[in-house]
Image (cartoon, rainbow, N blue to C red; front, side):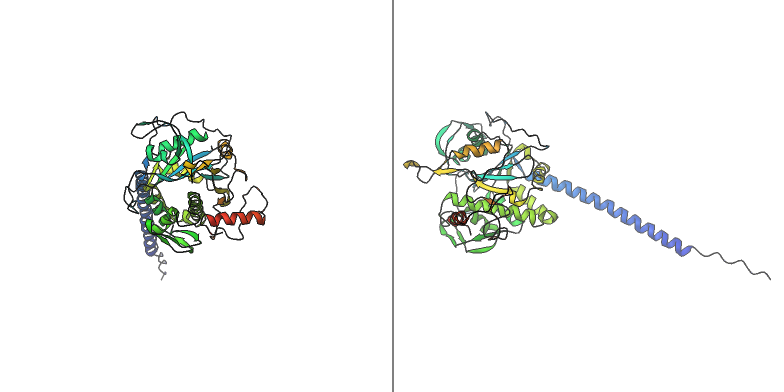
Length: 402
């Protein structure tokens, strides 16, 4: 009796497994498509939200007789960004000490980014500088006549940010590519978004009149304490505005170091928080009217070492006229500083102040310290003990740890 033919192996389970695999694949693909759509929409709404945060100040015809913009042979171009800190008490979070009145600016910093994107330096301008203010136009269209022998920050008080831009351009010959105004609330929120900034405080800061009480030590400060630290003046160091400028430079340098080297750029949660805080209280020119434009400038800093981001103060000397006691005037070397900016050249040691600070060497913090070099990447030799002693004395006079 012939044997029955062997049964064909059943492919039921195999087909079932293949069907299940196809189903899982479809679910995964569908999920990825949905996720991509949600992510894309999230990015779109975040982009729109951040752009909506920005306040754009149109210059119109308020900036006149402008200097010639510098040209460059590099693929990029040099950029000059004027940063102004507003001490307005208007707006949520700005009423910090029961002070009222017209908004002023205690902080003016011209930031120069080189065309080759190999260096950047900030030049602080003392608010107590006595200058001849040029004529300017306010945001309301009011024409302000020129006025001699007035304090630098008066331009901001009487004419707003664009009057300060006009003043800088006319007195220095430097073309301002972009301008930024940040208020108390925006500054504080940016510090909080990166988890605080490390500072070294050599002595207790006690200023009951302005509600400032910060104990000495090296630690990270944030919130109201960080804001109070950069505002402190009368009870720290020599009590001068020059000392406060130097502390602000050190704080900004430490902040830059934390953003660049602290891994924040790889943390979407922190980066979004920082951008949200940064844009919420910024007033900018039309050239910075969206976060992509701001991001392009930020990318320019990506290849610059922290030691090549340096902060100095315009050369000055104290005004000897009795009516201007305690005020300063720009020294002759200031013209050489502005010439370097216009020519897109680094500042020489002669033109930097003795306590120049880099983002890679912040006095008294983990980005600096006794073993950190105070020199730049230009190959300058190490400072002599005599120069180090002078630097230490000046840092201490500014209320910074040496």
